[in-house]
Length: 49
Image 1 (cartoon, helix red, strand yellow):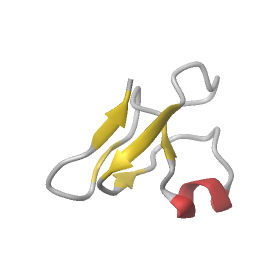
Image 2: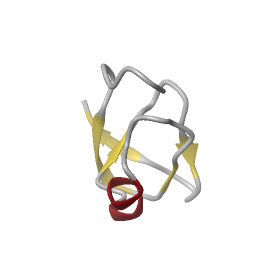
Image 3: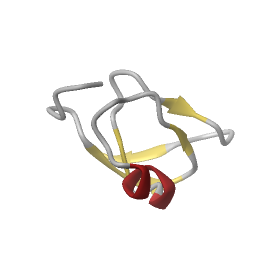
Image 4: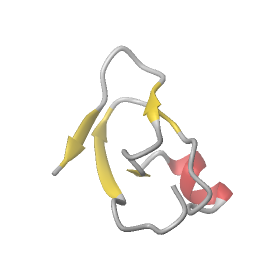
């Protein structure tokens, strides 16, 4: 969660951000996630792979 290599676009759902890479504004927008360390807050999380 520190290098940014796995940054992935979120298309549906709400992620729980556990990374140290995204800014607070980016985390609050819930548009991107670091799947290597983050999890879903919502029942499902759809990513654009």
